[in-house]
Amino acid sequence: MDEAEALATAGAAHGTVVTADAQRAGRGRRGRQWAAPPGSGVNLSVILRPALEPALASPITLAAGIAVCDLVNSRGCESSIKWPNDVLVGGRKIAGVLTEMSTSGTKLDYVIMGIGINVTEVPAEVADIATALAHCGRATSADEVLRELLPGLERMLDRFFAGGVEAIADDWRARALLGVPVEGANGVRGRAIDLAPSGALVVKDSGGRCHHIVAGELSWG
Image (cartoon, rainbow, N blue to C red; front, side, top):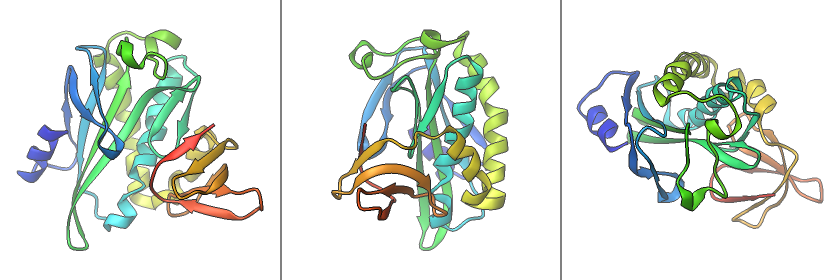
């Protein structure tokens, strides 16, 4: 995402796409890093400049997750979205979305959306928690998968920009990992049951109270 950040800072237009054949220092949530062998996956960053306040732009990750989930399903893999940014097949991660924002006060300058999809293989060190399209469905080349992804991604982002979370909520629910136990870093325990209008994950505890999880780590299972 560093190249995309440099381009965005230099004024690159909304919708600019930056791709990489290999990912050697990819960034995940909370600063995690990963590597992708050359040609083994889709690694792209998209520069976006939506006319939205920063708080309203944050759930954009959800819209991208829907598009990625649909792409994975179209390839013969039965996938689901794990809030907020992972796409899973059989409990293993096949794709992820990460967004970073640049703001000036209350003004949103740009969003950089990074998307990674495992196409042909995954590094051996994460083989127990990750999978690839070639392992569960139809996989050809990363370039072909990228070409299939972009139109659906554009449609879902346009829908989000026009109508916010409400415009994508039903699509997200239909693909999301819901009804499973979760535990938040703040001690909240319960089941993930819904998506809030803000984009937060709604968790119902054993006492029937609902909590909105907006950030932080979650243990699923």
